[in-house]
Length: 585
Image 1 (tube, rainbow, N blue to C red):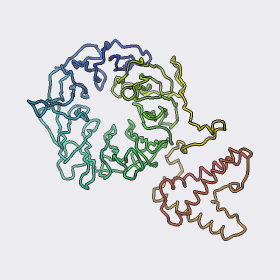
Image 2 (image 1 turned 90 degrees about the vertical axis):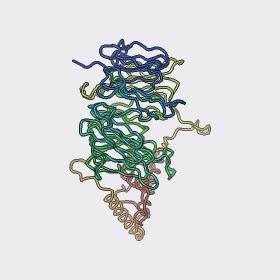
Image 3 (image 1 turned 45 degrees about the vertical axis):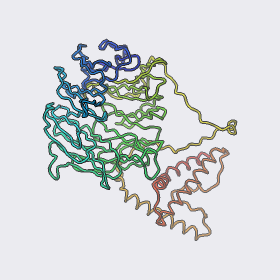
Image 4 (image 1 turned 90 degrees about the horizontal axis):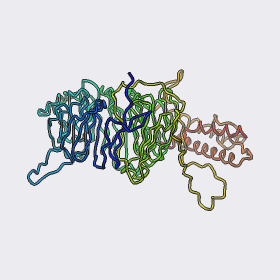
């Protein structure tokens, strides 16, 4: 029997309601529309069978399968809701308050038994950030961060702390996914000259001197993001500073670190300078994708050795999203970018489609691995609110625009457990749609009055880098290490310098130094009759001359900057481009 289509939940000034997923897109009868603007929060259980929401008066819980109301809790101020992984506990949070009679404050984090509706435990949780306790997938373990300690409870018995992990100034922790043995990653920020560090532990081995499975310390870290892979074998750590002391970036400074539970750790070498926008694991747990660098940003897939596997080149993007089955990757530019998406088949590394979702503030894959949801929500954007459901081949299957006097606040898919939807073969044929396609508005570049009646010249602010496969090809040698590459460049630079010296001594030879690989016709001042082509040839020669000068500086022992080394690496491509242009003359 085929699984039912995931429902779409919509929350906004028009109320709270559900929409049937593709191919129907009609309002669902599973949940009667809750009118009004008082709904502050809703959540599905991990398997999508339970749904809880707050209407400003009560928190209600229903069964999605039989449409019956299970419980109603008197919590008018609750703004956060979360189910435990096996639907045993409902956690609710409301803003922390104190009173004259109770200076310590009123417990604002409640844990309810979903079967009986009784309150299992109440805690004081002052901050909204990381408010919800973390459960292991089988609910044997539950953990909370309390005053420099991580408290562990077993089998949902919240009256007894089964174990504690105590480290001075623990700022954050993340419990590993998957089955036993459970692991936990903890972050402790640096102070008084001491570095920040992330440590991995296996529960409950915390107290022995060498109990940590792995340890990674770093000085440049005001905050970190820790990402476990699905198999709980490794953690990616994005370490961020609020201020980039070099002044190069408005975003501060970020570095990406890899830590494995077997004790191995490494800094992931990102070939382009600039901020790290996004890092995501593939569901296979064997590779991850990073989006990084000053715009246009690069995107690269790395393996577990932190070696690049595939480079997607540069483009207007700041986010990456793997499909639930891990066979499709979407690279997108949202927020202050135009909403361009690139949909890639990551088994063949082939581009499937390039749709544009302008003004999008939200993106989510449907659990079926075929459909995509994009939305424009308030308060991030208060105009043109609405959502679209796409097929990954680029066609819009359903579109809803909120009336101009209304707002959309939240939209999301009903979740399903892994394995419910089978992986389907990727199609490159665009799926037909009844929704009329909209051509995205192309913003024309500003032209000053003096240039408006003159021909447009194709000038680009940035050089675009095409996608390239980084895997060593069969028969090729292993990729060179950093040191080997450096020595190779030094050798080439010395060779070029010697050749130049010979040219200078010989009066019969041309005075312009040319590398051996340069075609002879690069030094001839040929003209094509096309001013545009001649201009391109002239610019290419100028770049090649600059590369030769950099090589000379390297040969003389000067330490080159990273961007200068990148220029030298482009020599071969520039020579090929020049040869192609001159062959066309």
